[in-house]
Length: 297
Image 1: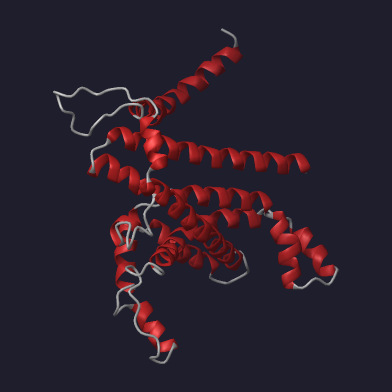
Image 2: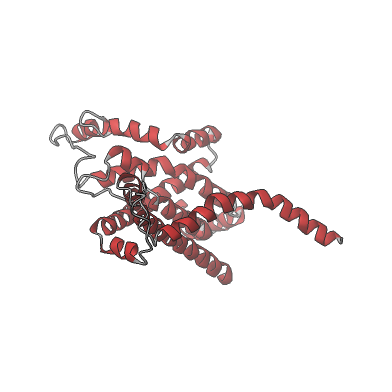
């Protein structure tokens, strides 16, 4: 056996366990979901009523369902609100800890703490902050000198979604911070020195050097954050259960409710397939944008 073939077999031997796990826990469950999405499968099958093939009926019901379409638009609204906020927080923190602060390593650890805390724990903590006697109402009363009444943040249709957005952005921004920090450290210092020689201010350095140099990083962070945003479930389920008036209902929660609460596995599988296609489209968009950037360079 030649050296090239031997190395090829060794490579496949090392990849084998990982590929097997991906096939068992990702590919196979998705294939089963696709099959189930074309049936009327129930969570608890009735032995007297066999599972039947129903074609595209589950998909048509989802698109005709006000609940599913409402969840789609609410999830899209959440993504539109949280992505720029979370990315801005991540970039700002990355710029801060990338500076010459004497204790910047300590700040790196502090800023990363929200991400390593479970979303369940974060949701419980923030639920107390959103209470009528909580921090946010206390701050609102103080800033308005008692003129503004307390707000029921999680039960008010106008404030429930912004409250979820703020919680999610705070818990997730350290992930974006790490990616932005890697991007910032990849920018050549010669560019900043040239800008200073030209008499550029700090703002001009940020606008004309930092932001353009982080274009690929912006694309990666924005698309990744969007994918994470569409997976919104835990904080909504714990804090609002999709309310009030379904203003915080999400795609993942619809899948959960259809499959596990109502027992309609076929419809839940169809919703999961649509969700997968949506996430796949976002990923392909990311690859196309990055490829176009490389072609321009």
